[in-house]
View 1: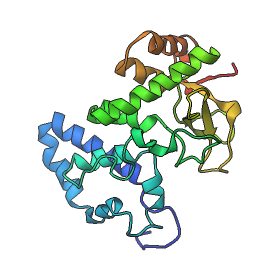
View 2: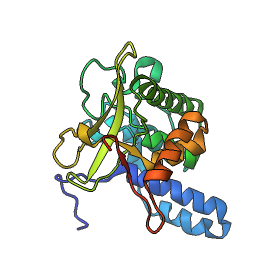
View 3: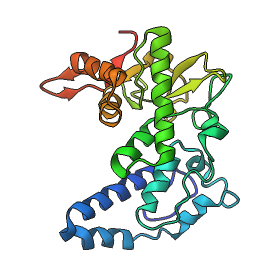
View 4: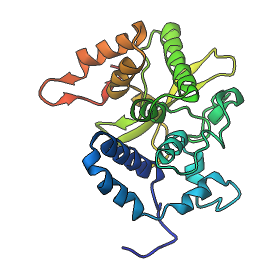
Length: 244
């Protein structure tokens, strides 16, 4: 309905961010559509987005947004349209243990998990910044380190499953000493449970890493999904379960 209600998830800021990026790309590459794209944004009331950058206001309403691993992607996408742009203003930097990356225990999904999806999207769709490159380098090195330590090709991302809970988020956790690195898989929308048995090598992540950082390790995961996850009639499957 068009009526405001207190219950319910409200606006999905990360999905709105994706739309802003898409509209910016369209109007940049197709100047004849610039007015149409601008008219979409002009119809929206986006002034309240400023609240996202003021942690002392509407704490409960924006709790999920400020804890989201998509924060930097959202920040950059709104910045494309001239809205207040303060990269990582709430999260500082990796040097200050962004997202609580170095954890001594199993993480809760938004505060202690490094999820690569948003940083990959930011690099491909918007362009790399120094901080984005720093995070992607860290994720790449952690994945490579797990492979070198355990012999398991590691290339993670969120994705669909062929069984319950049907969709999972996958991120990386490392010990503070860097001696243990492991992917954590969980469903935050269904039951909040972890599903370590569903760790998988992501097809879309393998393709993206090959495009962003072509090297011996990215080719290893890319070649693997081309051999085992590509159906020439239907395209790529989500990925390959580690156990298989």
